[in-house]
Length: 378
Ligand code: PLP
Image (cartoon, rainbow, N blue to C red):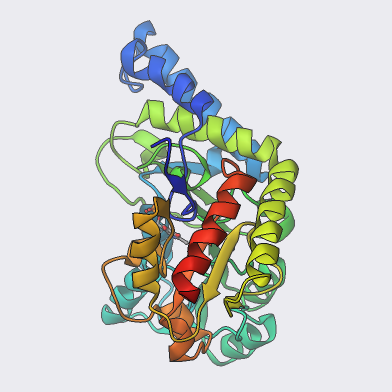
């Protein structure tokens, strides 16, 4: 897709070439089942062990605290179900999540509510920030077992005050889970300095392969096995491991973490150029989200316009952007995040998400602005 500009890096990212090269021997040559005892399988087992250690080092965790999953959705579902169900179930204890969580957190919470678990949501301010004071108030009125608040929002990029929110949750005796799917590999995350008990991640958001992710579970947090069958992942997530993808995920995460400062600087400079170029045009627009947000993720609203029409017209110009969140592309109503931050309907309907990544260039940015202005102003 040489002549296509990809500016939807919050939906997915291009696989790192080094990760691809690291993966292929595990598919073509070292394809043994890692659970088998013979030496042919030893390399596959070693690959998994090394990957677990690399990933743990990237987030300040211990290797045994990393559990491989099929991605963000599974990790989120596991985290919520682990605490709320089975022998771990803290009777009558509630789940509290933010209103702007991904559906991978909201929908399992709603199902748990149908099954009798008290469930409360906490609303953000107009920038998408969740206030620790507000969380404190809610937790003061509920008997809460689990708080789940995302590290950074996938539609507007707002980065939440995770350390403060963790502190509040812990002061009320609750476990803290964060969906870090959009944030990990893009901003510094250390589970210990932040105080996180459980964290969800998905490789394809940080230049790893699709269909692989992990759930971090701090030692001592009660775990309920998610998939039951074989003894993989310490009896907690059965099924033959996706060895090549696990290796590719670790490679991509390490690569991103090693270059995090320079990536942030470069992507922020792309974003600055985008905003300054657009400001020079006749297009009037409004940027959503907080000042502290994911670099390169720009949620932009054009009053009275139709976001979906903008997306399709940009597609005709061979530029990929998104309306609300990619996981919502089939729903045409205003996204729950834009509603929740109180964005007026005439702006919300004309909202698009442009997410720039490390593979974008200044030339891409100029073409994106040029095309957007032609669509909006003419
Ligand atoms: N959580 C967030 C914040 C996301 O943005 C996404 C995907 O867009 C997911 C969870 C789901 O991740 P996956 O597609 O790996 O299941």
